[in-house]
Length: 265
Ligand code: ADP
Image 1 (tube, helix red, strand yellow):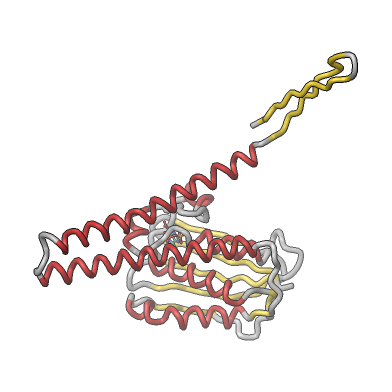
Image 2 (cartoon, protein in one colour):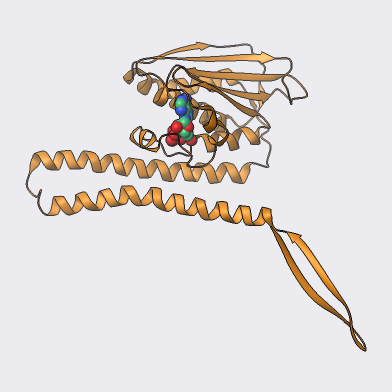
């Protein structure tokens, strides 16, 4: 998109020239359009739980008043919707925090082995509830990498949670940490963490857009699993901040592997 401005240049004695400026505003327009989409998406995502809550409050005050079975049932639904909204708000806060910090390189020395173990410990109850087996191939003497520990925990939390949500129920998740002396696009050695599930898989056409905010392959599935559509966007920004790379390999019906590659120095 080109913006054209024409300005007369007036010298004493009359018009001397016309100054024509061409400016490429595609980037600005694109950013503006993305911002508009984002606001529209957030509003939409907030409105649906609110509509459900308002509807059930109305019913509880009117037709279902004094009915204990209906009341218990509706309160469960209302609780789920309130939790959904609260997850959305906390993901939005995380996203804006990681976006704001994206240019500041993290300095602390972090052990990825500790990060993955802490993530799995925090998710333990959900993993057990779902009857999932996690096969973790650790690398205990792996070198520490420059990083932000809590943000890296968030990366693996989101990826393992997705592997649980979209993996086969009662199935298996494989996690592996390895060191590679070289990796395309990196000047030195890297650490690679792979998270593999044996679930739905993702059609290739979706892969390039998967880390966009609110992009979902199946909106209904994501929402019923409690997803906000922001998890992978948060992951992408944190990995960018660490000058790393996220690669996704997936086969429909067989499962997916999400690999996080992070530079050692
Ligand atoms: P959500 O909150 O919807 O899970 P994410 O940003 O974490 O949002 O993921 C975006 C979409 O990518 C999901 O809605 C889902 O369609 C797809 N997806 C993510 N991880 C996996 C996976 N391991 N297997 C299959 N699909 C996945």
